[in-house]
Length: 624
Image 1 (cartoon, helix red, strand yellow):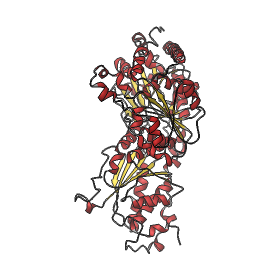
Image 2 (image 1 turned 120 degrees about the horizontal axis):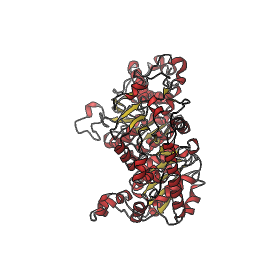
Image 3 (image 1 turned 135 degrees about the vertical axis):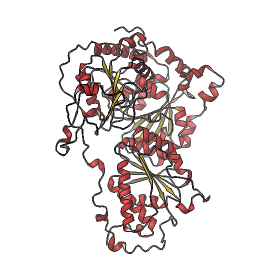
Image 4 (image 1 turned 60 degrees about the vertical axis):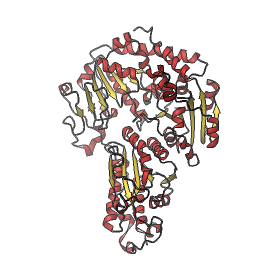
């Protein structure tokens, strides 16, 4: 006898689903998010049978389910499976698939479908699901109809393996499998003779050799000698990769870990360079921050760290950390004095519009360090993409031929502006939106996962997040910068993780209130810091705010929701925050389980006016 699940004997659909789920389990899948429906019955049953190795979570709303899966994949770094029935169900995954593509998050999307003979004939719950997500998946295909033929079972196994790999290499992202099933969908006999499996199918042989690609070492670039003229003379759009003549993989089997990219001579000779630590969610944040710090200290270049970068949460590693650059650059004289000749951009460009405008105006020579194959230069400057990670750079002792006056200017400006910000914020007793990000940066328990919503929360983090040594793990959906799935993503990040926090505005939360339906399946704790200014605060910062009507109705869009009643509907704890001391008490320590909303009520127009009055003033009198 062999250990094939007995239920797989019932019909060919169930056998097909068993092969698929068993392969995924052996590859390392631990979480599958399943939306209810009929056509997906074989997969639902198969995933349920794989417990406890695979946790199968039922979530009603497909959009919410997709973002919950996105959050889980962000938190764990491993692919998460999404399953839905046929028809429009899969369309509700679309926005999360887009975000996963741009944010490089591994998702394996399994949309079940009617068989080909029931398409294009007005059969119920049938839409065209082929290439449903356009060009966003890393890879996509439709599986063959289920078959009990051994050759076809091997085809299914290998297609699943390939799908798993493509979700993670060469760049993480979504993969879409469209999976047709004929009736019967329930695990009842379908007339197929499966008795031959008793003698021909041996699971341990069939699945032998399957292993998660994460179990194998990552190959690193070797140290090579690069003539400094090669990079200097390269075209602005040059992209260096492992296939470039600048790299060699010979001898990789023996000393992969020693392969490093040498520092270009141009960097060594430049006395007016900066490093921009942009938007990033590295799997090993401390190593990532240490690598940036080593490069900074070697070159004597300051590090302008985005509020969403882990660099601000490992501040002691980097003595040349600049956190107030957005405020500094609002002083036009300082911006002119600090214009760089060269820029190393690590990861994606920061949120700051001031920084982008400054880089665009000064047109420095730029290098983008990122392992992906994507174009990360929205400014279309004189840019070379180095397709490596910052950890792959070979840091060495360099005798620089210049003094570090430029670095000192940045550090002096940072010290003065940081002091002005901290003194100002420390004296504010009234509840204003901007102080929340500044306060949270200093009071969370060490290592807390924090999801930061788009619109104003992410910008207040950029302006005011104070460098700390708390190791806070910031998460965000900055791929497409939308407010879709904010709550569900945060719950996915917090599920079975350390007690977590989300910072969000009211509209982003309301846009995803179906996420609260996950509460009965959620394991862990999430505190939601809700900045309720009754509308779209970010629009108050835009020129359209001067045109009312129609501003308030179509842009401000107040919803006038009683969040205490809303939370009661979902059986979620709610508390109105009345002071900053009150908020601080509720954020440290954090509870161990449940979902809690801490509502911070602010005045939208007053918040906007405060920013307009103050953002440009912190550095107005600074001289260096």
